[in-house]
Image 1: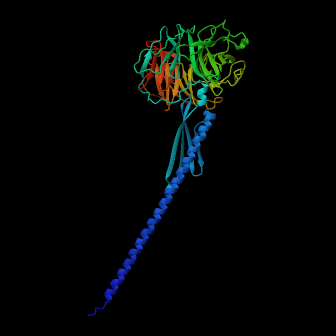
Image 2: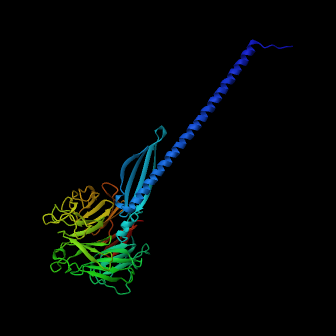
Image 3: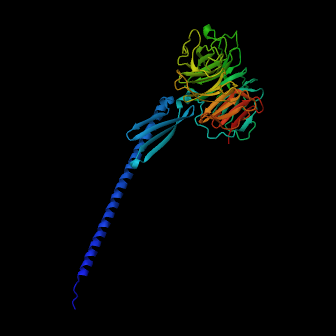
Length: 508
């Protein structure tokens, strides 16, 4: 029997065919859309990768250029304003870690597709090799790693006979001046252990004696050009009527040798330029070695209070020049031909920070005005003396004599980016009725001593805050000696009048 198709069957078959076509079209559409998405997604990823690589290369190039520039002029490495390079915005941020190191951060940002904000950041640390050599290697290269919120004694020893008067630390060897023979002492702390209370001071096998009390010291490493050997010299400011400068070869810490002696009252020097020792004792309160020259700061005397010697050959100091200051020079730092000095003041119009151009020690500028010495510098509120300074990058940290009012703070932070012009005050801190003996700055910390408070003599401030904030409760050294204080990572070296009179402090 033959079966014939009906009209309903034809309609059904036609409907199925239409549905198959719709399904096929849908599959084709979905497949095509997926292929397009994969294609465009791959293109977006490729574009992001290319811009990322390009930004990374630009950031790396900027850091390498700054590294090269730092070898020529380390001081010129400073933060810069945001600049535009095509689609990229570039920023350089520089942080002074120590007087001889900086951290540089390069940040590059741009807008990717769909207004996505993208950035990369690279950082590097730069060391001031030339600057470190200029100060005889006596410069901390790394910032503190400790939070310094819990100062404690790491090790100690007692200098005997007599009391220490000053110290300078260089590569964990600590050089001391004293008020009793032999007047010069050395402590080797390279192998000091926690809790050690003796055995740091080394005996002199040659019976060395400096011959008189010492007011200030500066130790340097020096390369002998004839042999290439490294030697250690210590410049000593003597508390004497004559022969105020002595140079000690301390390369062998067990056999120091006196190699030079100089008097500030040299008959070969014209009378107005030399110190007249017959009328007053020229007490040298501070020494600073920089780039082959030695700068001496004196108490006010009958003659120039700033003296400059060439010590490129340390065993043969040669006087280069001097400058009348009419005040006591309490502290000196020299960098890039500028001498920064903490000064006493006699009235409210005098500067606690004086700045001079010493590129020509025989003609130090600025010149005298109306017969009176003129300097660049900063005149702080009140009449409290300038006692100590620390310099990191283009920032001076000035410690002053005790003040009775917070309106005359005794710790000042000053911008010396333009030292011959107006010097802005960046910040300050008031320590109630305390005179600051020494200030050392490293990383975000300012370490300082008080010479007028017998129970709260060591403080740590966080100077990354404005105003600065105390990091820890004050620490008691036991009647700290004003100039008996130094910092090397991650230790403080300090002298005192109490026993033990030499302490190494750390913060675990």
